[in-house]
Amino acid sequence: MKKKSLMAVLAFMLALSLALAGCGKSEKTAGGEKDNSKSTTQSTLVYGRGGDSVGLDPATVTDGESLKVTKNIFDTLLDYNDGDTSIQPALAEKWEVSPDGLTYTFTLRKGVKFHDGTDFNAEAVVFNFERWANGNADTFPYYGSMFGGYKNDEGHVIKEVKAVDEYTVQFVLKRPQAPFLKNLAMTPFAIASPTAVKKYGDKFTEHPVGTGPFVFKEWKRNERIVLEKNKNYWMEGYPKLNQLIFVSIPDNSARLNALLKGEIDIMEDLNPNDLKQIEGNKDFQIFKRPSMNVGYVGLTTTRGPLKNKLVRQALNYAVDKKAIIDAFYAGQAEPAKNPMPPSIPGYNDAIQDYPFDLEKAKQLLAQAGYPNGFEMELWAMPVPRPYMPDGKKVAEALQANFAKIGVKAKIVVHHQKMYLPLPLKYVSCF
Image: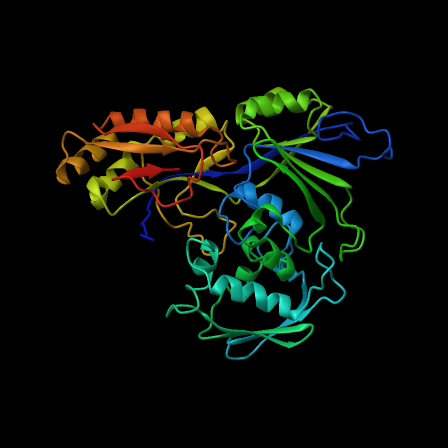
C-alpha cells in the first residue's frame, strides 16, 4: 500500500455537537408502526443518522457510521469516561503496570458471555490481538497506527500478549508507550467472539458477535440496522432499551422531517441553521455538548503543486474561515488552529492561526512558481458529519475562495470509501 502524507490546510472546530430528540414518542417498530405487545415505556429507539455503515467488524473499518453501531455490539478492555478521555474499567476490571512501563497485567471480568454463548476470557483477548497483529494496513488499519505497525514490523510496540490464567491477560511491550491504555479503549480494539470470527471469516463484518449491550439482528444496506437487547449484559441495569434501530437518512433536512413526522426518535447532525427553528419547541429536546471534532481539508503533499510548502500556505491564507463558519455553522464553531480540539491532551493554544489574506496568498503562489494558479481536484464528503454539515456546500465556498487566487478546484464527490488512499494526481479532501 502506498502511504500518503496529509497536511491540514483548513479546519473548523465545532464549539458544540448537536443532536435532537422528539419528546413523547414510544413503542415504535422499524417501520414506524405501533407495537401493542410492548410496555407503556419506550422500548425501541429509532436513531436517524447521515449514512450507512461500511462494516460491523470494528477492527476493519475507519468510518464513524460503522463504529457508532459497533460500540453498541462490542466491548473493549477499557473505556473512556463520559465527557473526557480518562480511562475506566470495562471488560478488564483492574490493571497493573510494571515500573519500567513494559508490562501491563489485566484482571478480566468473570462470567461474561459473547452473544453466541461462548465465554469471554484471557484466551479470547489473546486471539483478537494475535488476529490484528498478523494483519496489515488493509485489513486492520487502526491497529498499525496505534501500535506502531504489525507483528513483523520493527516499530511494532507489542512484544507479546499472553493468557496468565483464565481471567488474567498480560501485555509485554518492546518499549514504553505513553497512550497504551487509551489506545486499548478505542472502539476498533473491541473484543470479538473467536468462535464467530472463525465461523464467518471475511463475512464476520456482516455477522458481528461481541459482549456488548446489544445483539446484532438485521442489516438492510442503506436502510437500517437493527440491534436487540443483550439480556445477559454484564453491566447491571443495562441496556435500558429492548431494541435499537439505526436508520440511514443522508440529508439533514429530510432527517429533521422524519423526526417531525414521528418516524424516528432522535437525529444527529442537525443543520446549524435549523437550530433557531426548533429551539423553544416543547416537543423537542436538544442535546448540546462540547465537541471533540475538527473539520479539515487534507492535502496530498507528495505530488503536483501541493508538494510545495508555499502553495499549501497560500491555500491557507486564501480561505475565509469566518465567512464559512457564519454561513454553514450558524455560530456553532470556531476556526481551528490545531489538528485537534482543546479537549484533547497536547492542544497548544499559543499557535497562531492563518489570517484571511488574499494578497499574501497570491505572493506565495508567485514565489512558488504559480503566479497564474493551477488546477486541482477537491473531494467533498458525500454524507453529513457534525464537523462538516454539508460537504458539497463547504466545497463550493472553498472553490470560490481558491478561484480568487487563480486556483481552479474541480469538486468531486465519491459516495463510498472516501477513507481509502487517494489514487489521483493531487487532491484535497475533507
